Image (cartoon, rainbow, N blue to C red):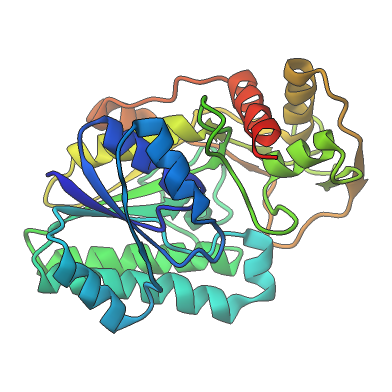
Length: 331
């Protein structure tokens, strides 16, 4: 395998995975509509790896555009990140989420089948577990997702399972990852959402910069260590390396893997870790719970460790340090 299509590769996780692939000797084509990313990221990737990156600006919901892309390049594999990803926004805009996230998957799978691309890594999410109790294990029956974003990921997983059932040569990894944070150690790429951030770490970073007045903590009455939501935070570079391990370990059929640290951290614990590493004070206000959130989610990572030989290496402190370094570096 040498030429990999990274769909949504200008985004947060896609850009870090593109770096990991390029550093491992793969060639990469990044396809992105830039709806929640910026083309400057391509140049930053090139700066990190010291080589040119192929970039195609297109909408992956458009069948003709996707067909032209597969006509132009001979791909050996696809890593699919191209999706809307904000849980709260998905509750407010369910139709947009169902259309974009499911149609992009269908278009890419159609093209893979037509052009005989047999290797596919899918960016899924721990939200497919619904209100199961942590730690989440891949063998758990998936419950109804509690927000449209999670439901789109669950439906896309089912589409890929159904395709492997009728195509014996199709090899799929479903990567259910938890809460990516941090940035590349160079400070050149990181999480760069447009507008007010939906995710915790970039919001914290912008409060630290003084761009936002304070952090809003959604709920302090959960049955957790301090009443705030608990999540399994994972450094985005660890996560990128997990995609590389999945690509190398692909086998015919479909396998799901959790990518996380394997332990939970509360919102207040993350704030304290950020303050300790950066020396910055983060003012916050407790407000009501956010629709679509659950109390606690963290991964059982036994399967990915035993089968793919991967496990996260970077600490919460390193996640905070690298996220803050990127935030300082981008402006």
